[in-house]
Length: 321
Ligand SMILES: [Fe+2]
Figure 1 (tube, rainbow, N blue to C red):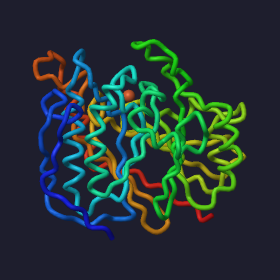
Figure 2 (figure 1 turned 60 degrees about the vertical axis):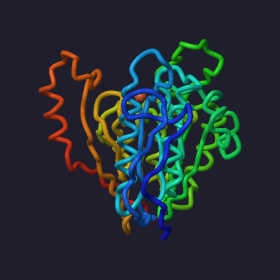
Figure 3 (figure 1 turned 180 degrees about the vertical axis):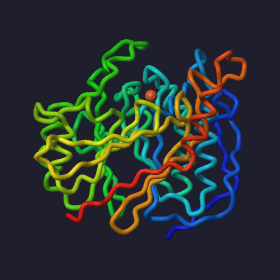
């Protein structure tokens, strides 16, 4: 096990962060030393950091608080996976510059981060700030990653439609779609995957297709696919994938909360243990449309949802291969 260097970590420079708003310098107390659990992974989604002067900026404070909370975990997760929508709305370069120091805090604590693409991201701009993904992707022209998490793999697909040439404030299509090359790659790779694998993307599985058929048909039919995990809806919920009565097995999908944009606010931890993987929700808040205390929104239901979601988990049985 690795032991991380912890204590006060400094945020600095124009792309640093304050909890209150601006991309300013500051420091973050992260607690004492703790070991990493090789079987523990933290899932983050829909971070939506706004690095510009216009619009809501509360999302910066939420990711700062979330990272601080993760760095105080004992044991620490061995890796982090981000399920897309790292950018605020339009995939602006300043969004990626503003969020980069938070991801670096995790990396510096020995928690390597893998980021997937959401509909609010802009692939080419993301690559300007995080160029390594152009080298590591499994499918050229898209950002497709495989994360080795020991007992399981995470396959992060890229469902962002090919919209890098859109205008500066054009969000592009909201639904996801897999490129032809990516579909061909998974049609070949998934049925013969060597160990349990969680297929991941920003988008709900029903939005994606492979070989002209719904993606979940391929996932249910691929023996080592353990489940499907996604973001986009900013809510913690599970659904079943079942492709007709002829199939004797069903598999689950899991939707993750947002770290701070709207809806269920929090993150999730997956621990693999023996023949299962258990994902637990860390619900930090719920709000819609924003947490502004001056906002006249009725908070009654917000508080009920937070109470109801405390302690929720989702267990995936791992295929035996
Ligand atoms: Fe989102």
